[in-house]
Length: 450
Image (cartoon, rainbow, N blue to C red; front, side):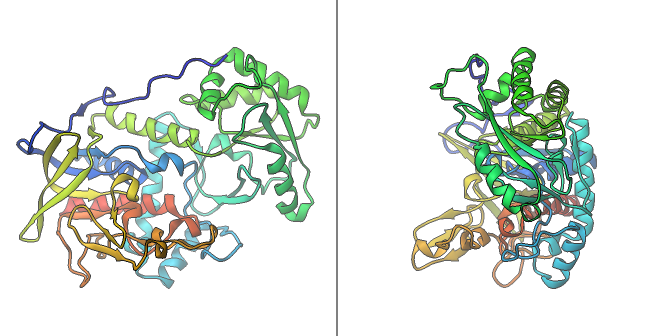
């Protein structure tokens, strides 16, 4: 049977601060550099500062939408949102994108920021106990949960055996009663789309040990259970009997451990006798939970101070510099002062901007970021078309400072990173991870020089 759900990690992990005294706010707390955000760009910025010997504070606003998005780091999957041809060499593609679009966030951050930030991330993942692989000069082509090929650059090793540049047959493996992955659908789609239907693709389902057919369970439940050796060996034995092709790679939903994915994956491959690869499924993403929770915890374990569940909602500016920002949670407010600030926010979920019926504003400087006659103008009716709301954000300078519409910085010591930067939709070109790395790294460099 599945173990009972564990309590989620909270403010008890590592060193942390509350969000201040009640009432109108207490005395300001002071730090070297303050990083605001809960996604990959915030983590990269904080780690960059830490490795440079600085003492940043990471202000974590709350739930990160990136738990639902990140499974791999996509640097550049497509040259533009309308092409179906995947980019084979991401770094060459980014170089061309920078040449063609000098206002793009990749151009603002610069190619060295992407290269150095990616090296920093891979080194950090190894230090934190993860096993990832990939290089900036080659995309892997991995099957999604619906069986469509997706280009990805840096990936967990537990996903790498799914690369469609390899020739071995694939068998998608599902579980009875598990609704978030339909192996038959994935197999049907991939059999048509993989090299014109010339490759061998199959599908099997097996029951999970101790689980009744009417039991409701999630990816997280299975992932926890897979860390139990007896449960995992039982699942592996059932798959060995179900899969008839000894040459096949096995594609499973991403459930090979919630915290110990590397060990679970290695053991499961031995137990099944097949190469095994994980496939991200519907949110919440087990792969995203593994990545962000472990990196966040590693920062705390190595001395980074964090402030939890405290959205930043106001910046005080005088003489062209930000003097302090204000953090807010239920009944509390806390001023925070720092030499420089990095706003590494991704979208409305973590507070990058606030939308009314007709106007989108930023919560720090109260600038109008977008105006629409009707809220419907922010979206396209087609799910597969570029979405206007995805390009809403802060205009930035060449140093990633937020600017007025005339291009002058709102504050010389504030820098932007991540999805809060205006003018691009990372989803259409599969570049969200790379841009988070590049802008997070560059913003940290600029903050240290401010």
